[in-house]
Image (tube, rainbow, N blue to C red):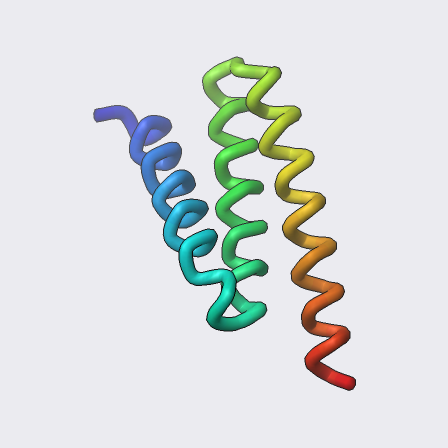
Length: 75
């Protein structure tokens, strides 16, 4: 197994695990955003530009959700 493949497996595992835990705490939304960023990076490494764009969009969506939830929790 190449390092790139291992990175991709880790990214997807983080994404799926964090997505399953999102309802428990806003930190998991942040972890999901990190997993999406890692998956976008992996897609770029392997030259899969449509998935790079899709995962990049998910990264932005998740990061914005995380920031909004953090702001709400601080109030």
